Structure formats: structure tokens, C-alpha cells
Length: 238
Image (cartoon, rainbow, N blue to C red; front, side, top):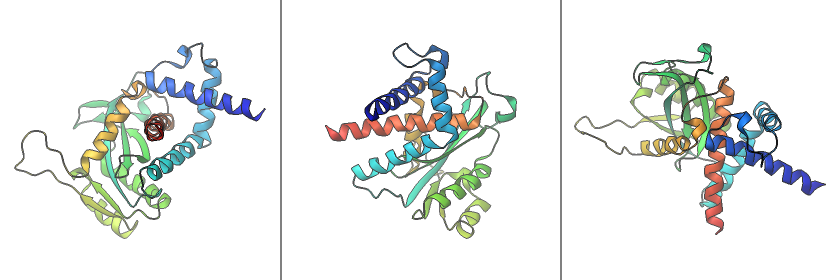
């Protein structure tokens, strides 16, 4: 009986990952998997009960340990990515990013120095990086007690630096682009979080935001990162 439950659990996980990886609709779930409404119920239960986050965080700890790192990070990198929203995204949770000229949503993330996700928050694209960072960094400080340093780009300057230092006891260090540089330049630490965004965009479900709720969009990001880490762990076992 226990083995049957384990097999069913893996079956559901594989079905959700297939959806995220290939960008299909729920109703287009292949016949090799359970019927779509059962898979969706599983996804929704894991989202609402925080199980996908727990699953993701345990995988991150194993991935860091397999690479010879402490399971708990001491430093991170913060950044945001604006993506276009599908027609299914309600106007109440979307916005216009004037800088990127994108009508949709924005994914705010913090990653560790290996590019593994520490926390994510999805907002309308009109929400500024500084506004979202206050919430995101507070979550980070509450969850990761050893983390003391966070690198960021120029969009996170101003009062946020003092807020992070005085309230959260985090050193927010801004990595600025050299004014004399031209063309594409790899910036120290910043390239790590940009690579993570690249990993996420390989999941077709994340090519744009299709989700009616922001917590569903956040869950999709977590599921995508579980695939990244599972593949990395599988390679180390070979």
C-alpha cells in the first residue's frame, strides 16, 4: 500500500512538471498521466498548503549539500523580471512596466550565489523593484537566519539600503555598471540571477504569465526550479 501511494505521488509530480515544462493547458494533460482535474487538484492542494515550497526548499538544501555547500545560504542576489500577461490574467493583478514597455506581471526573486531560488514574489509589472524588495527582503531575513549580504542592481538604491541595514540587518550592496562600458558587460554577482531567469524561461509555462492568481504564478516558478535542481542532482549521481 505504501509503495502504491509513493508511485501515485511521483505520478502527480511528473504530471505537474510536464505541464510547467511544456506549457500545455490543464485540460490538455496527456493520457499517460492522471486525468487533468485530479492533477489540478493536486497542484492546488500543494500550492495552498505550502507543500510545493517545502518540496522546493528541501531539494535546494540537498542540491547545495551535494555541491559541498552549507544547506543554509549566507548571501543572495535580488532582481526582477517583467513578463507579458495572457488575457486570462485579471487587470487587478497586472500592470504596465514603463521601463520595459511590458503590460503584465513582474517576478521578483532572490537567489543564492549558485543561482538557486531562495524566495519569489509575483506582482503587477507596475510595482517598482524597491517596493517589492521591502517585502521580499523581510521574508528573506525571517526565513534565513545566516544570510547577511544581498547584492542588487541600481534599481534598489535609496532608502531601501538603510531599511535593509537598520530593520532587517542585511547588507544590501549595489553592483553598478561602469559608466564607461559599452555594449553587453558581465557584472559581478549580477550574472548569477540573470542566469536563473534564463533557466526559468526554458519552462514554456513561464514564457509569459498565464495564471489567474499571483500565488499560482509563484508556484509555477517553484515547480520550474524543482526540475532544475532534480536534473542537477541526477547528474551528480552518475
